[in-house]
Length: 460
Image (tube, rainbow, N blue to C red; front, top):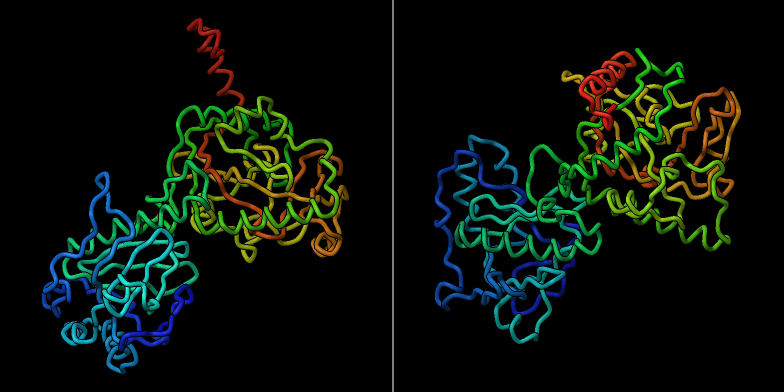
């Protein structure tokens, strides 16, 4: 029995059979089941004529109304069917009985919610409260399987299944609900995100996640940022193999992760308000290297605007390809901190202002390419530490001292790099995946010589 946290049960009216503790069917027809979808009780619309709303400019107008089936509430048989569905040998029997445990209800889809009514009259006349209200901003995936419409909600393990009279009608509801959810969520995300793609099912990605390659103009800006922040003279204990003289960016992928972005945006606003209430902050000196590239309008146009009120910056995070995919699909996990190299400044998200520092933690894949993340990071008030051996309670001092992050100044301490550590994963958003190739000094010299031989002065 599942009571979805995003549902808001209302007082039933009109002799409704649903109760606040609703038994929701959290599954779908098993693979290979040939039972036809038409073997269902006829909907009330069958005798009343079509109930579809008119088309406006080729799209279904809102509100959209129509009949869908929901599981009957307060029945032991529904619980048994949920158990039987997990056993292939008995799923045919479960499917046969399942059709008798569904009841038709009238639904209304608006800009921000999907409401369930006991009858069409109660919806049309606005005389009854809805039995259930589904908040569209909590939806992170909309899909269909046969005649079932499946709604997945953030922070909920189960999905809500509603059934249409036919497969094509379920597809119509899919397009209408996905469009309404997309419009409801679009205000929460950057304008260039593809919300419809985020809501579509992709077995290789987490829900409400989409990844897409950026245009070449954006790749060029990332290459400039990587070149600007690369220092090849340092060889630290974290460096494995040769010190590259250049990191050649081959591909940049924009990460559209809805759940991570909402948490990040909330934390950024909280830190900005906290800083404003405390009278502002002192800028970090010297400046973060990625902020000194020049032509900030070009960088902002390609990558996105930064929030100076919370001291937001572009920073790099180097790791393995598997970790890059895991982080971009979900978020940074503090319980994984230190598994790759160590935690000199305590458990947190470690970020670098220099691409060459992040590269020390990257590993080549089978094609010879490495990956790193270009992240948005809210630094807020920064606690500067330039000790060669930092205190073990530095993270605690950061939290209790009114700071939001730590700058581990290894540049001043031992002559290498500065690192930035955030102790809340919600302070960092993995915005781009950067795939690149390490270029050795000999390879760079050969490329320059080849360009000179070809009289290509610009490349040389």
